[in-house]
Amino acid sequence: MEREADPNRNRVPDADEGGDDSRGTSTSAASTDDADGRPTATTANASTAESDDGRTPTVDSDEITRDTGGPADRDPDEGETAPSSPPLERRSGQLTAVLALLSVLTGVYLGALEGALTAAVGAVTLGVGFMAFLIGDALDSRFSLEPVEAAWGEHRLHVGFAAGLFGMGILLGMLLYGAGVDLMGLFAELLEAEFGDELGEEGMPGGAEFELTATFFITQNTPPFLLAIVGAFSLGILTFVVMVFNGVLVGNIALGAGAELGFGQILALLIPHGVFELTALFVTAGIGFRLVHRFGQRLLGSRESFLTKAYVYETTMLVVYAWFVLVLAAFVEAYLTIPIAELLFGGGLEPPDGTTEFVVSAVVAA
Image (cartoon, rainbow, N blue to C red):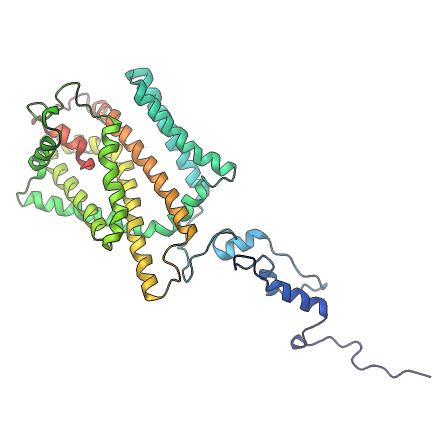
């Protein structure tokens, strides 16, 4: 006796019927979160269609990294997409290697040709500090370039804004000079009031007591470097003033000194260390402005958290990296700027006014 054919025997279940138990179990597992409330790797599989042979395709961890904009264990910033940028890993590694090499070569120059052993040790130590970022990358350590790159991606637009403010200050300083306001004499008076008897009669360093060392410039530059970040507590007003004021000084004094020394010499005295020093200052000012921005987002409800552990850690690493750049600027300013300028201009740097060279060499440290 024939059995009746079951009409549902070979029928493929509809999508809304849920399929067999195994697939239902897989879907349930896919929705499981880890202990910190972040989706696990299987979450990505929940929305992945099955292949033709019935097997569920796997998802590479790199795909998760690309989809979320960062490593799976990184706290994402809610309600925000990080600005797109070119791959920074290779570029940042090359930049760090160049900075490390420049620091070490500066140390070799100071020790072998200048006999300044203390300064040489300091420069080589700085090079080791830069290399520590590269070593940390190779060892997958927390002290590495990865958090620096992540922080740069978040702050770079605000760094650009800070650089724009500085440029605006330069233009304002030049306009003031054109209107008859020369800040050269005022700046020299401020230096004389600060250092007193350590300066000679004409305002130049008066003997062995006063030396333009890297320590001097580090001490002078670190307060405005940190002030640019702390300015966030004034809703960015203090950071704004720091950037514009430094721009006004550089623009006004460079224009005034250029009229005496020649603009080629002024550029030679400012560019070698200014490239590093101003970059470091722009970074911290950008951090200050970004903090204000994040606080505003939190007040408006577009951000769930003002600060996250990931943001604090990454930003701290960026500040450390920027401070290393600031220290490199101090070594260049103290020991290389004048020799470079003399090499370019054949030693003819003696200014008509005895205060001019000192003021120009120290203007960015104001």
